[in-house]
Image 1 (cartoon, rainbow, N blue to C red):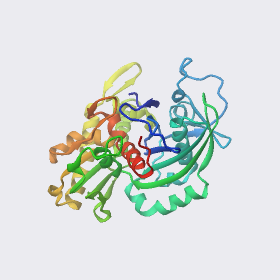
Image 2: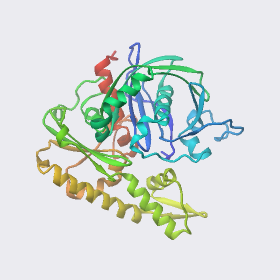
Image 3: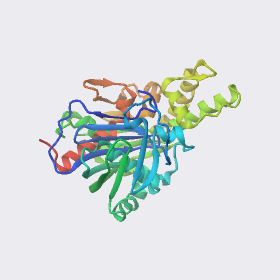
Length: 369
């Protein structure tokens, strides 16, 4: 999948429920929005919002895929979201911790919900995650924000009719915790991996800004043993790649979203010539991984007690080879995603939390057949 990949698809193996309200699992990271819904639809797009305007020419050469041109009107105000914001505005990836309280975050939430909804008037039950540090300090404030806005918006996406999206119920969860429930539960929210349902589990979620390390025992979140590794995500790797480009290619200074594409493809094209970035990426990822290893050694000295250590997130995918040097039994997330079990795929790993949130939402709000 292209880094700017943003698409709406039907989730193989999922049986849509018949509940009145649409159940949704939503993971809004610093880099990407991942959303999956109880009707089997899912979407992925960059977490970038820019100011909208009238466009006379749309890209995509006639493509009807709304993800190529996410022009989004929320309560009458226009925004460019995802790929379109990258092309047509100066918007950049936002790694500000307070982003969850600004209008861009709200636009991302309602864009995601509109993309997976299938009715013009859609009531939604939603599970969403916050990074562990924000969950501890900002959960109540974030809940108040959602309630204060009555949790309903008129949303118009190019190519769709106007939709009224109402968030009827919501739950906030530690972000990385969704991954373990994704491993344990099937798409009917029934236990598929009993051995992980008891005992101590360590979840390492490599994100854009941070790596969250969640400690769970008998499926209960253990707050005092959970923590976040600041500057332990792919953002540090992106900055190292950009520094390399500036030094070696006449001050070439791409936006971070463009560097993220290079990270995924492990190459860059400059003036028509392709250069391999593997050595730069691996050196940086190794340094970040060593920082994470030091944190784990200090804060989880008894990690040998874990029944499993599970690695998720785009950053987890990049750092897996280096973390495995110290923790040879660490599990890179595996899931049914594109119709069969897939291990080690970046996109599967990205969706681990959102899929887990969906399964929790189905369990809580009941959308089983």
